[in-house]
Amino acid sequence: EILVVTGVQTCALPICELPDTSSISFTALYTGHVWAKDGLAAPFFRTRGGALLYGALAPFEYMGRRIAGGNIRTFLLQRHLVIDHRLHQLINSGVTQVVEIACGLSPRGHRFCQQYPQLTYIETDLPDMARRKQHLLTEHQVLSERHRVMPINIFADVGELSLGHVLGQLDTSKPVVVITEGLVNYFPLAVISEFWRKLATALGAFPQGTYLTDNYPLYQGMPFYHTLKGLGRLLGAVSRSQVGFHFHSDQQATNHFEQMGFQSLTIHNPADFYGQLPIPQTRGNPMVRILEIGRASCRERV
Image (cartoon, rainbow, N blue to C red; front, side, top):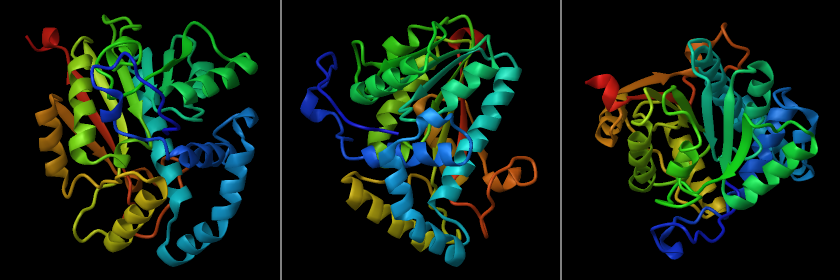
């Protein structure tokens, strides 16, 4: 999740032209507490601010569950656990490098580095959040050479905050997985597509790149179609961001990522994992989808 924007002296764009995400900090605290509350995070990930937000939203979460058959917490856990599931499978197939962008208070890096001693895991976020995460993990002595925290701004083209600089820390002879969770729907399609193009190009330096992200598609005929549009407007107003629902069909998503420079897209519906994973179930079709997007290097395709 995003916390704050600070000055980006090394970006090719002027600072004033970078999308402002400074008002989304409450999501990092709330989601961090959800992971801790549901046993996905070590106790030191709990924050007072997250607990207050969790308590304040509890009545609304209860009503959402009773009336609509699902709530924010349900979708957060669905997306987190499906991403975890696919990451486990990719690591078991040979992946040893992971970059999590806009990590916020996600416990994934800590959990996976404990489980997989061969794993290199870089957590990234905007500078203030990255410093906070670095301090938290250092305080509890869980950082190492293979588990690091770095600052990033996904719209920086050059310099120490750029995607290229972060991926440049990795071994380009080995596959890599890049994760964004709770990020892309805070931007209009045209804006987040700048990052997707950049990511597709950067992953071309690796023999195989896999991008895992959550997305909230707005399919016509989908249960809670109008509810989702209303929630998007509400979240956009509260966070002072342009919440966007990018795709109206699976084919539209596939075509778009091909235009960005990726070669494959698999769309995972949490409902397909009911009975396989310990994820909460919704009444009807879940609102969230996990996109698994592939990019092979030019060398591999020759």
